[in-house]
Image (cartoon, rainbow, N blue to C red; front, side):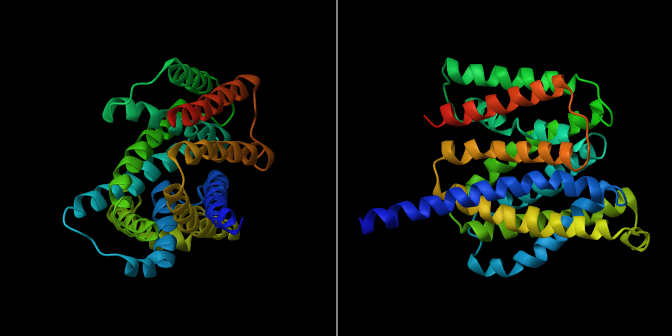
Length: 296
């Protein structure tokens, strides 16, 4: 019996880490909306990564780059900050937190499609049904007009979901050989550094942006994005998903869009039309089915 307890406990800890990370990720849409009221999207991303980089810098002592790693590190950092987060927050600035969160729910299905295209996976009819359900849900959601929602914003958020899948596949190359926290720190620090010239070119010097920040909520939102939604979440996720089968870890990804949508509706007071909820439900059902079936 003691042996069984020792075997079960690490799995439960990994599940808890994955669940908690996805709930916190869901809150990033709420924090992001608050931060975007005063800051441009490029500096929201840069500030988020700068805070997380300061927290995770000591983790660089946990590993050392090996031959052939540099290209994956640079590509991972680029995909994570300028592309994935850059597109997501620019899209979030043009649509609602509820819509953005639900569109991010397509990631598990996109991962399944990536497995078909790049890893030679041969899906059965259940997987195709999951892909079809999620695709129909995304089309229904994006095609549904609503207050505060824009087609361009929704498309940018979807593009960020595609970038997230590319980032996950790149990070896998590093996670096979290195400590999870070390890989997380590398990605965040390098990705954040890449955002500096991009933010400056797009929105000018940060001095004016900081000087014109008048709402305390903006600073609290940035702290939430940097500490909770980046430094803590990516560390928990990378550690937890490394300990679990992909099918189990992937199933809990659905908690991010669900949490984000709930916060958008309840705290931000965003409209939740029947068509939007139906589209979101199809995305979540398809994502959950793809995660479970894909692991078999």
